[in-house]
Amino acid sequence: MTDTANTNESYTNQLAAMQSALENLGTNVFMADRDLNLIYINKKANVTLKAIENDIREAFGVGVDQLLGMNIDSFHVNPDMQRKLLNNPSNLPHRADIQLGDLILDLNVNPVYDESGEYIGAVVNWEDITAKKKAEAETEKVNEMMRQLPLNVMLCDSELNLMYMNETSHRTLKSIESQLPVRVDDMIGMNIDSFHKKPETQRGILGDPRKNLPYKAEIVIGGEDVELQADGVWDSNGDFVGCMATWSIITEQKKMERDQNEAQEREQAAAADLQNKVEQLLVVAQAAGNGDLTSDIPFTGDDSMGQLADGFGSMINNISNVLGEVNSGSNQIDSGAQQIASASQQLSEGAAQQAASLEQISSSLEETSSMTTQNAENAKQAAGLSEESQISANKGQTEMEEMSKAMDEIKSSSNEISKIIKVIDEIAFQTNLLALNAAVEAARAGEAGKGFAVVAEEVRNLAQRSAEAAKNTSSMIEESTKRADNGVSISVRVGEALEEIVSSTNKVNTLLAEIASASSEQSEGIDQINQGVSELDKVTQSNAGNSEQLASAAEQTASQVATLRDLISRFQLKDGEDNGNLRRPTMTSAAPAPRSAAPASRSVSKPVSVGTGGDPLPMGNDDFASF
Image (tube, rainbow, N blue to C red; front, side, top):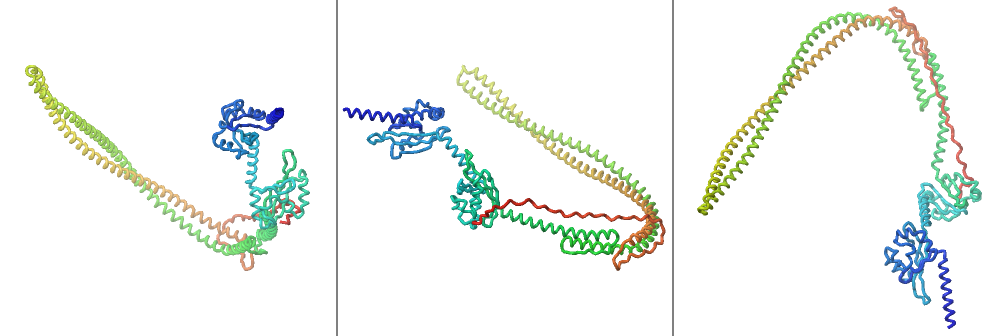
């Protein structure tokens, strides 16, 4: 008996200790019995639930103090799934994340057995992982952004083990994989020392990241030029946790720089050669400007300057030839000047005769213009009268159309009245029948119906008179309708006749307008002819004066020929070209003072030197020779 009591006391003490441990456990704990009724909530869970009580009320409609004793079916949209899971302890332990409003809870469900090993319920420990899930989502977002970044990015840890490369790096390395000592897919996890001929160089740089990072260098991987930048990665405490390298292949860019440098050197050499040739051309040009056309261009070629030199030489030769031809043509000009003077005298006499003829023509044209103007005015007046006739015809046509419409309305009204008369006739016929029936009935009634028979007879007489009046009225309406139809036909014919009048008047108006327009155009044409004759008279008078001036100009031309000879004699022409004395003109006149033409100065621009850019980025001591 005493042993049993001691055993019970020990069991009670153990149970109390276990309950105390659960109560003070730093984890949220629920316990449900075999029927899934909530039978225990520890202190930590109660405090946590109090903090999110508003979410619990919004989700389940109860407070924290009401949860104990509730069945967990109340907390699930699909209770059958939870019951199927928890009724079979072989499904436990079970872990799941659930959504409670804006909160995310991590649940861990374990079975509870009694001393005999029978499944008696379940215990649930849980925690709020909302912040953790948000942090994981943000981390995943950053990882996704890094993965899709259009830059080559690689990460290594503090021990310089390669731990990450984004898709762009993987894709770029794949394009040069044939030049690499390892497969791109095997690089993750490798130490970067494997990629360097002198690992101590890189370790010396990365060994002091605060001092040396960020670090830029240009290196060679296989046959490709690569621009590399290394940056340090620090945790929230400021401790160095690794290195991030961004890089790009600049082989084409370097090739372009080399090509640009070579092109610049070629341009400088071409500019010096151009300067030399320009100076040689200037010597020849200055000699030509001083009158010496005997110098030759000292160079030729197929390039632009060679073609310019050939063209410049041809120009000097052509000028020399032209001057010789001008010298030869001066005598011919002198002879021509004498012939012009004689022709000018004859032209002056002919101009005087032409002026007299033009005066007679002008007088005749003025008379014709006056007659044409009068015709145009008469045509305009006739057109005005025709337009008034057209307006009257249009008005008559409109009135006939209105009359035709009125006749149609009268005809329509007559038809309606005829229909009404027919109805009255039918009513009279029916009334007559009724009166006849009433008389028969009155006869049957004997003495008692005599008075009624008299009334029926009168009604019958009235019905007969109404029928006869309706018949007469109908006949008169039919006659009126026929006359209205005849009036409509007449108005239609009159309208058609007026329409023909309007059409004919329109044609007359058109013809009169054309006559008036033609007369106006003729008048304007005659005015223009008058103006032309006046202008011709002025030109004739001007020709007479010009012929006199032309004779004077011929004398001046002879004098200028002499001056031209003096100008040509200043040039030194090549052998075989004649610049001898001109024959003196026979006509004498005061020669104008000779004009001196200063040669236009030409400036030659110096070639522009193209400065080179700064020195390229220093190459790293280690050129990744192992690649």
